[in-house]
Length: 170
Image (cartoon, rainbow, N blue to C red; front, side, top):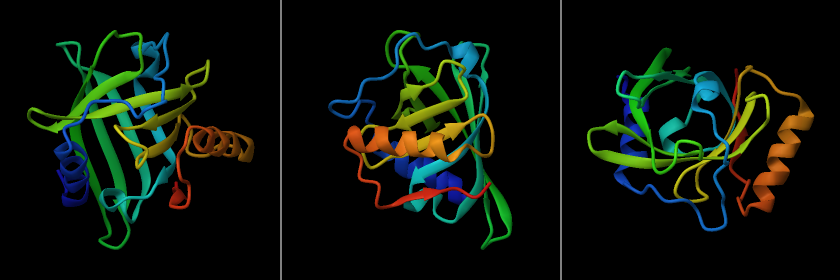
């Protein structure tokens, strides 16, 4: 595991919080099988553990024990290298609710909340235990302006501050 994404995982999980931000509702009718595969990070609230990373992806595959293997990958142009972190996710409650907990280091878990998901499972809105974390993910490396604007509108309506939002270079 490379340093930058290792730090991502450590900082994210040191909080150890698997809750949901007040007023945010995880999606229901969540289908884990349809969610598996590769997702591209389109936009995020910038934070130190992903700072400077571009071409960020998340890949989800099913483990034999029913948990989900998570591989986060991004390119650090300053260092001229790819950074990768491998983790494991489990549902916090029912498996048809988009609320999981993810761990990159042993028993320490952080919240992974899917609060927006289109019918075709092509775009997803994610947060963690508070509104300091926000991502727009897509099955494709680019989305239309309409998709990005709809994400921003929903995020603002949900109480996210978008001043630090960046669109990720893919």
